[in-house]
Image 1 (cartoon, one colour):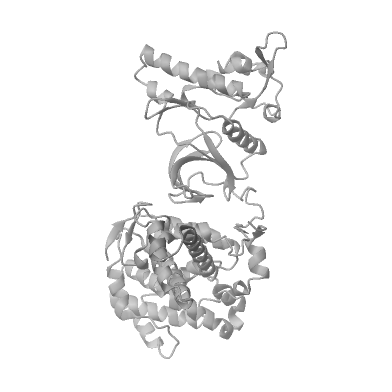
Image 2 (tube, rainbow over the protein chains, first blue to last red; image 1 turned 90 degrees about the horizontal axis):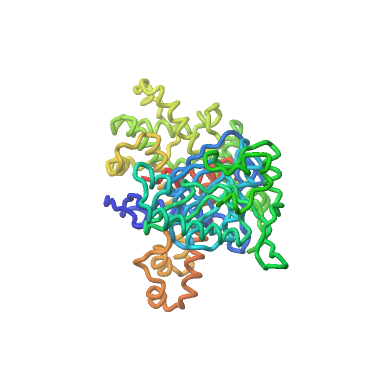
Length: 276
Length: 250
């Protein structure tokens, strides 16, 4: 028996078995292709329910083992948890690249409002293409719930970066300038972030700030003044998201970083100035 | 892509093979029609005996005890001793077999009595001469008996399907194609260039990629069929396959 480590998945295997092929990679192929029929009919792998997006019975674990498949993605490592779901480092099989996958777990404890918020986050961020905003690649539905894939930013959050050792003035000014330009870009596209805070800014390995987590994002209309041509905004939402969610009395946003209008009865007056 | 259908729809309506999958046949036959299910059960046992043997050995039994216990267990299993009993895990043959074995091993003190009972009962052709040789090569000695059993189960499945796929290609006069392309069954390989292999096989790059895709597709399909033989309903197939992926992580 000759053991070796697979260069693709990192698992050990016996080269004398399976005609020298890695069993884990072989299993992954079987799982990926098991549902494609030669005549073009694609089987829907159903697991006890007709609609895979329906909540499964019972509480769902929020952890997945290494190698778990979600759509085209093989989960590798849990890298974060948030109020809406969990984030994994993953490999996209078809393009053989490393990405991040955020999953909202299906379950009887997942409300329609939460699912809608999750979708809204993906939609909001997907339309933004800026070097200082984390890019969204695609969204999907798996057996375990909604997910979307995004660019993986290796590094740390701004919150972690400043913990214990403050930034120099020039460093802080550089970050603020880049984040401000990115936020302005989002506003130009009609997207409010509504949860700008240090833990939602990632600092990449090349020391670039990247805004992430558009979980509370909201669309607004950008209008031009007929007299001056300057842009103004109206905060009447194009989506029903905020209306539906706040109707239940939910507090949205991180308390320490919320502007006054987002924590008072003037909630409806939140706009680009709130992000600033 | 064509119309999407549920696994259950296709496999229940058009897939006659699924309606006669081995384990579902055994369960459907129950305790009054053992003759019907005997062949199906025998096929399953013949395929999956080694994971049980490895389990018994990992439980701490010596080689000669493990050999005897394995043979005796299968003799009883094929005689229907456990199929009719209320052993948990009937949905999946993998669980059921292990549950039945644990029932059997709980009476392991009655060793001498068991020796006398083997008698003329039906057994399966277990190659005990190589069984322990194989066991000695088991890696990861920190694997629990259950974990070892599951890992061996999946490896046997993967091996079965690979062999079956190779045999299919050989029967179709494509043995060389299979040998050259099987490396792509584990994904794209940086050491295996599509262009080089296409030249070797005198195919275009595009044709080779199609051939690779078909090979992968067929592997997936065959694997699904093999797993289906060991579960009682179509819905369990993908859960079983996803579970296997986690079992193979080292």
